[in-house]
Amino acid sequence: MRRVLDFVLVIWLAATLAFMLLRVLPGDAISAQLALSGASRAEIEAIRDDMGLSAPLSRQYLSYIGGLLRGDMGYSLTSTLPVVEVIAPRLLPTLILALTSGVCAAVGGVLIGAACLNTGGVGRIARAVVNLSLSLPIYWTGTLAIIVFSSWLGWLPSSGTHGADRLILPVLVLSIHVMAPVARVTYANLRQIHDATFVRVARAKGLPELLILRRHILRAALGPVIAVIALQTGFLLSGAVITESVFARSGVGQLLLVSTLDRDYPVVQGIVVLSAVFYMLVNVIADWSTRLLDPRIVS
Image 1 (cartoon, rainbow, N blue to C red):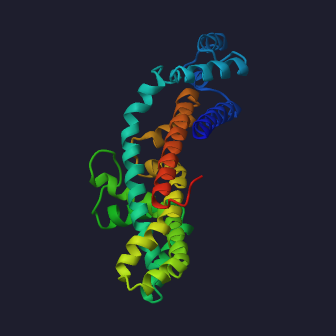
Image 2 (cartoon, one colour; image 1 turned 135 degrees about the vertical axis):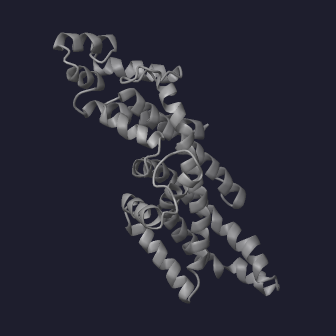
Image 3 (spheres, rainbow, N blue to C red; image 1 turned 135 degrees about the horizontal axis):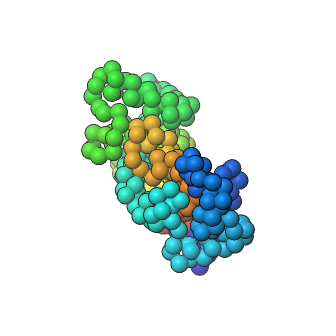
């Protein structure tokens, strides 16, 4: 029951913050579009009245929340299409980008985190990669990837949505930035557990080192790692906005950026709510996975 209440609370807070923050911005899509077309002030106000934009904020808010409860996200101010129809075609490319990047970041983060335990050159290189990933802005990494792999080498296309080859660079850039926190937590947990009492007991029993690593060390260390991966979902979603803009991918991230600039409130609010739902679902799955890996976690 508490999980359900937390889920509802987060969605409500996300919807409310999106509603309030967007209203702080000056102007709206209707006023901007009609002003450019030469419409009179009276005509603009009449259309705003028809679309409910002139109503008091309290009434707009209650109407918006009531629509969400009915599964109605409203209509786009720029295209007049239902928000669901505007977002739906963009959803799959973004989900593919986010999920693929998340999987690559999880696998790469665990491997590099384990490599950081090495006291030789491999460990130094792994730690340098992690520190470099943490320090570079995502837009800088994306631009550098385009220059190197598209302009100089000509190996991969620099833009577009369709085709596996157009997914490689965006996934590489986004996963690099998600990978670093995963690697750091993996390294810290492995180093802590490596000399734990239960591991020393397993070694004293004569168990092979590989079996100890698989059955004891990884099982205990991966719980916090999964939690960090779930927390990085927020960065995956926000990073997708920048990544899709850099690589000109037609996804939800690019739609969010354009809709924000156009003051298309309903579309932005719909994207924020769906992102919050996705974030909460990932965290619930991560919580269940952590409990399965470490039965000591009961609450």
